[in-house]
Amino acid sequence: MKSIKLLAILLFSALLFTGCSLKNNDVIVKVNDKVITQADYDKLFNQTINNPGLQMFGLNKKNVDKQSFMYLMIKDRVVSELIIRSLVNEEMEKRHITVTKADTDKELQNMIEKVGSKAKFNEILKQNGVTLAEFKRDLTEEVKMKKLVDMIEKVKVTDADAKKYYNQNIDKFKYPDKVRASHILIAANPEEMKELIKADAKNADLTDAQINDMIQKQMAEKLKTAQTVLAEVQKNPAQFAKVAKEKSEDVESAKMGGDLGFFAKKEMVDAFSNAAFSMKPNTISGIVKTSYGYHIIMVTDRKAAGQDSFEKVKPEIILYLENQKKVNVLEKFIESLKKNAKIEYVNKDYNPTDIQSALKKQAKQNSDVAEQVDAANHSATPVAVPDKK
Image (cartoon, rainbow, N blue to C red; front, side, top):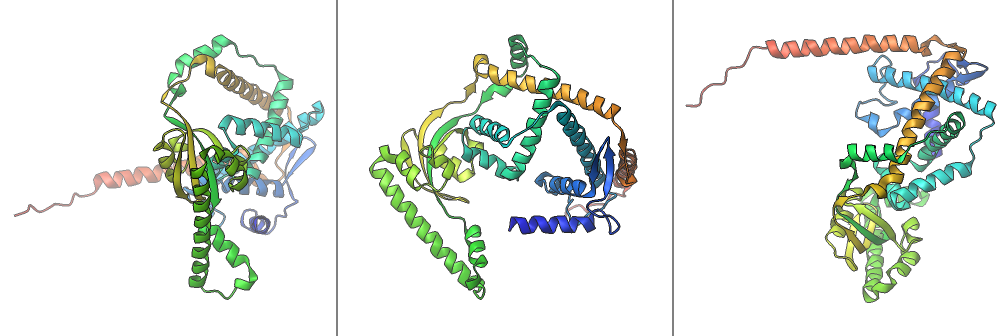
């Protein structure tokens, strides 16, 4: 399904964004001895425009005004990023720097450990509308940049630097109430069930009512399974982790006996958090229904709101400040690469000077319209409201 959708996007984008005269292998920019093609641009543009955060601006592949401020802003960003990637890749080739799958997987595992669990990590991805494949793609670019920076300049952050940051940002190290919980999930999502039913050719003639009946039966079976598992762990709570490993359908947390680590109330879906935060340690919930299915929760610990000590967060602060310094080093280095590079905009539509000129023009038009609307609102004749008698 996803491969078909991606193919459709790529085929459609060739017409929608580039016009009939351009082909996907047409060169739009030359960077030293490397080239950026229309296909490169379309791919990154589509990845950018699919970001859920942009949907609020009404920008999508079905409704694109190529003179709109948002379109031009994204176009400018995409062209700039493609040039930077080309320059960085060229520099990495010169310095014989490589990024392997193992490098990316190691960085990904580090992030999962910082979050607390794979389940929590996946929840964060879902909340941000990002797939694991998309995240790993961006993470690979980040690892690439880190390796390059490490070769350019060794950055150093002292304990004094970290302490200063801690004192100036003390509120960042305060935390709300947290619970540590394990869970057993019996997956039951009506929408996913519906998709599977419709995907089966033998169900092609079913009516919506018949499909809904099938879903209700499946949901009832899942609930019955959850009730059986609940009875099992209520009878022997000490076996909760063992049962979670054997029967939970949250594969990642199941490997850890259902353990989700500590989490704040806002970090989980409401129904799950409301149940977990209403429980005392070493107690087991009833069946909790969420969009994921049926959960059985065991709270194992609680942590009252408080503030992390400097010693506890020092490694985290040092890492953050090191990354900030690395970003600064990288920005300066990229600027020097761009300054010394030979960049030719083969297709003038992608020349940043022209794009930014169009952006300024569009921004002025938007400002003028806003001023006109504001003036109209202030000059409008007030409507008299009759007194009540």
